[in-house]
Structures are given as C-alpha cells and as structure tokens.
Image 1 (cartoon, one colour):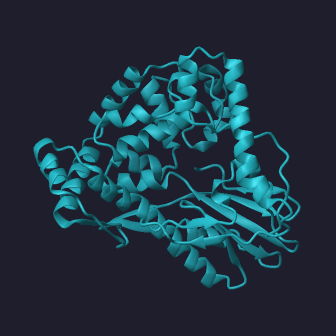
Image 2: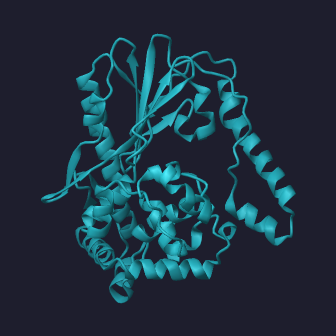
Length: 362
C-alpha cells in the first residue's frame, strides 16, 4: 500500500492524569488547549511521520500474538493511526479497499450471554445503544429515531437542538459508551472511576457513580452472569469464548479466598471474563477474514484491528453487497440464542475518496 505524507492538524489525545493535574494547578483553558496540540503533534511526528518519512510503500506485519486472539500490527502500527489521519496510506491504482467496523459487538455478546432481553430487542432493531444509555443516565428525552440515523436525520433535528447533541462523536455518548463497558466488566459502579471526560459534561463523579448503581440495579441478569462467570473461572482455572477459544488462568490461593469471602473478583477472574467477550470478538473477526479470503482469492487483507477489518479488491471485482453476508451473519452465542453482528462500511478509492455504505440502521 502506498504511503502518503500527513499535513492535517495533530491529534488531541493526551493523558487524562496530565490534564487533571494541570486543571488542579489552575492552568487556563487556553494553555490546556496548547498542551493538547503540542502532545498530539509530538505523537504524530514520532509515531507516524518519522517512521514513514521517505517510505513509498507500507508492508505492515500482522501477527496474532495476544492471548485474547487479537492481532498486533507493526511497521507501522496502523490501527493506532488517529481517524483523521486514515489517509496516511491508500489503495494501489486499479484497486479499492472495503472496511467494516462491527457495531457494539462486545455489548451484543454480553447481552446475549446474560440474556438481557431489553438490550437484545434494542440491538435487534439496530438502536444506538450508547446514545440511549447516555440519555437514560443523564435524564435526557429519548430521540424520536433510535438508530444511528438519529445523529443526522431530519426527524431528530428538534431533539438534537433541544439537547445540544453534537452527532455520533458527542462527548456524552463517548463517556457513557466507556461507562457501559466498564459496568459490563467491573464488579460494581466503582468501575466508572477511571472514565475520562466526566467533568467536561457538567456532572460530578458522585453523580456518575449514582447513575452506574441505578444502571446495575436495572440489569439483574448481568450481575448474575458476572458472578457465575467469575465463580466458574476460579473453579475451572480457565474460560472459553462461545466459539471455544480457551484462556488458561492462574489465580493465587489468596485471590480465591478473598473472592469466597467478599464476592469481589481479583485480576485473574476479571481477565477470564474479559476473554469470554473480547476473545470472542477476535474469533468472529478471524473466521470472517478466512471466509472472505476463501470466497475472493484475488483479494488480500489490508488491516485487522480487533473489531474491524479491511480488504483490498481489484476494481474488476465488485464484492458489495455480497461481502456483507459474510461479515454480518448470525452467530449462535448461546444455545438457541443467535445474534447478528452488524457493521458500518467504508470504501476507499486510490484517489483518496471514500464512499460510506449502510450508515442508517446501526
């Protein structure tokens, strides 16, 4: 894949601990903004520009090195390239790339495993679960359209103005997306203490914890499933994804005793539960990649990034919409319980242009 120079503004990513310390010292918002710009520029320069300087083609190495089944990509680490710099590489002339990102796949797996019927019905109707979670937690009115179309549809224009909604990247959605996953994996609402950006929403940590406690009380099946999973992880010294990938566990005797006495899981049990979900995502993606490669021998894998994949196709082969049948098919997560993992799609052309598929309905 050819490499392209970068020229846009730098990433705004920076450590939450650094920002917190600067705020406590009374640093002004203007200085904080400059700090963000500087940190992003340094990261961009050292991680991407320097490594691609003078490079005409990129041949990244993709190796399934992680215990969960996830792949590691190096030379360069393309999955870590910020979204705004996705044009750092592009297809060869005479070819195009097609990329999919699974939509809320971890949340769907958790809901299926614990048989949360409310969430399963929401997913069945392609509701934007993270926006709805934010609305519920913050006491906002629900939008008239509950799919991801709510971010742009005319039917939700009044609602967006009413609540000041900023689209799919609204910080409230981002915060409660992270919060939802924290509650899915954590022991109690204290799992939310590490969520970033809370203060920027105008709510306190205490208010966030209260919202988390209410959320967990409304999900008794989730709490029961987590307890059962942690107990079984200590008993069997292993966990498996619904597709069978095993993760061996090595808890200490003290960790097991503390769990028996308090019900609070240690790091080993948490790793086991995480593997059941995150390892399943890797399994689904790996099997999907194999199926696509068999179906179209002329294509090749460009990128694997945990819950997304990207393939290169020659222009004379049109894979859409057939490829969607391979990617978005149903999986039997529990016995008799099937879930369809939907995705968002983008096609990249060799001239740098993009075409988005299937945005409504996710």
